[in-house]
Amino acid sequence: MVKKIVYSDYLEYLKKRAGPDNRRIRRASTVSLVIPAKKGMFLDDIIEIADILLVDKDDVVRKGCGWMMHAINYLLTDHGSHRTSSCVYQSNL
View 1: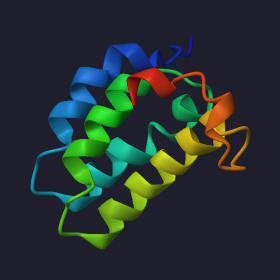
View 2: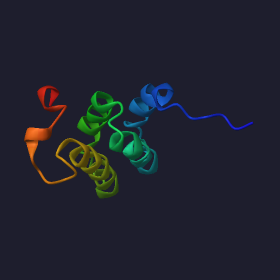
View 3: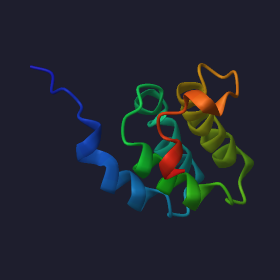
View 4: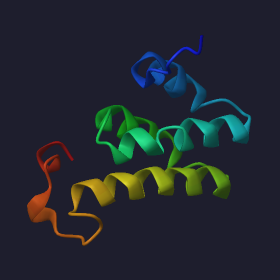
């Protein structure tokens, strides 16, 4: 039987993985959260991970952060139209 992945179980693990020396692991910690970001899940945790990795020296890691933040922007700004009036999460940003 296949176990269903529950992202909330892995958030602390992903936060710890945002710091190691392996760039592939750092990038994976961002890219793995793109789908939950699109669904509006774990936004505080996703932004916390982005805060750690947006200043990363590796461009591939920063690109993964960009995908993650783009997913949040798309969700919060009426599907990417950059209208903050429809932002449901604006008070916490």
